[in-house]
Image (cartoon, rainbow, N blue to C red; front, side, top):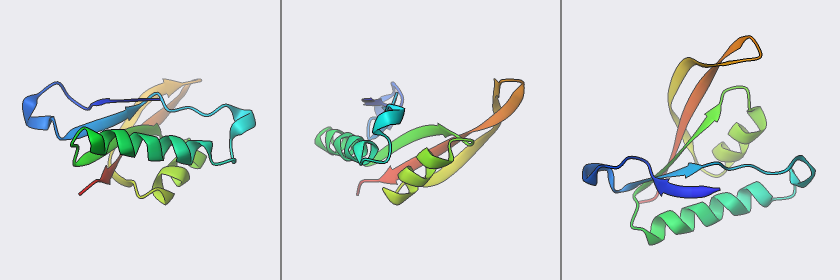
Length: 99
């Protein structure tokens, strides 16, 4: 997992992004994902961020539920953004207000 600026613009410096968050299947359901999200939040706050964003595939129901439980809200959907195994899948933008 990485926490990085969401954009390389001074005007968006207050927004950080969670990128590359993954939990091994054998570790899922043990609180690892929640601890990673808590760590990402801490890093973003230390950097002075007001918002923390992430993107998740619409088909990843388990991850979306985790993010929602951690306070992230859906802010946008990129319809049919990916073609996976012959099927178009939406990309969901979620964000957490850090103020």
